Image (cartoon, rainbow, N blue to C red; front, side, top):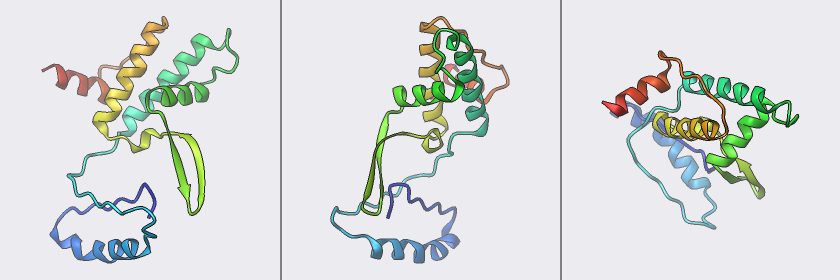
Length: 148
């Protein structure tokens, strides 16, 4: 069982469909470390709208820094923001461990992504960069909800 195993069950009728997969994965566990099964309410993953805004912001940050720092490409700004605010993790594939891999925004839920975007926005502002927040963006709508 890998770190990312996930089973979403939307209703009681789906339990019987998902149970064989769960039993198979539990039986495959090597038990060198104990297994933990957590049941919790499903939360929506970060949205494509939030992800698109993050990419726009990384491009804006890159444009600000690229003349002085040639390696400040949009992709590298994205990596830097994720490393700075999400951190790293070790990925285990069988017996192989790939250490210190930058965490992915795809693993965040909508609320966690808002917090991550808040951190990026603040960092940019502190470094003299204005990041546009479209009024109709999901990020802005969620920020408005927080303030109400």
